Image (cartoon, rainbow, N blue to C red; front, side, top):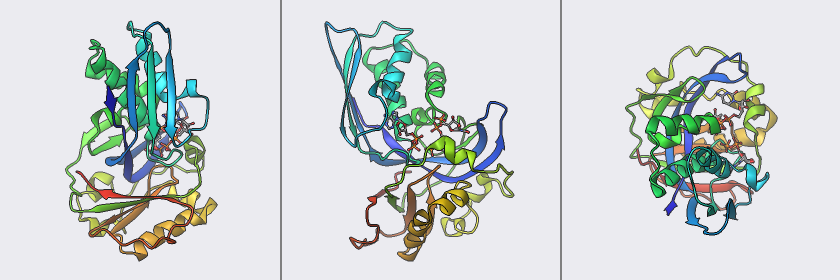
Length: 274
Ligand SMILES: C[C@@](CO)(OP(=O)(O)O)[C@H](O)COP(=O)(O)OP(=O)(O)OC[C@H]1O[C@@H](n2ccc(N)nc2=O)[C@H](O)[C@@H]1O
Ligand SMILES: Nc1ncnc2c1ncn2[C@@H]1O[C@H](COP(=O)(O)OP(=O)(O)O)[C@@H](O)[C@H]1O
């Protein structure tokens, strides 16, 4: 069985408060984008464990700590799962604010539930996903939502970007999420994101912010430079996604990108689907 975990971008991100458990309450809009990994699971008779094979981008860290293996282990603790070969073709850059690892994990949970017809409710799947990462449950819903709490309480948003194109730029910089949070001073937003998002996209530039940008841009001016280049070539709205380092621009028309505009960066263009 094969599935295609997709990335997300954050439309606005306000870090509202630090919690006693050291996590942060935030408000953000998760918006799925069609930049995808490929994830396949094949039965491995006669063996006892799961074995992960990765092609494409090589992920740092030990394979057995990969979120896909952690998702398998979580279900295996409660259900009689066979040993499997897992093939991941990694396309979504990591340390990028695109949620690629969380998406792989959420899609793995659903794939195993479907492939082995496990009696797992949607609620149970969401709570397992929450154990794998704060933004992991979102990928089980996988449609635009306003997320609050630590990023796992969802409210529907009526939002359409269907006429827009996306340009996504990921420089060769990895930003660990925990480090990014530690550099931000939480603050209540003056205008709630749920209000800003009702306004036309043309007005977002002066209203919608990502609270990670200030500290990340001061450490890495080259990331701020990417954002201003996206505006220079006609973006209606541009922002860093999540804790970075990727930056996206929303465009009314797909722009021509000169080859040397973002040297050394991964660049992806696609359509908005929602
Ligand atoms: C910042 C966001 C915004 O969408 O995404 P990314 O930029 O990573 O994609 C998310 O909050 C990232 O969620 P996720 O990457 O799942 O975080 P986790 O693995 O659960 O946590 C990694 C670390 O980030 C910090 N953390 C995470 C979420 C949160 N609401 N408050 C936090 O303080 C904690 O220090 C935690 O130890
Ligand atoms: N399937 C996976 N895909 C990508 N990264 C993974 C995966 N499993 C575990 N990881 C780990 O998660 C880290 C990326 O996490 P994070 O920085 O939160 O991502 P992002 O900000 O891109 O959402 C990687 O450096 C890697 O060590």
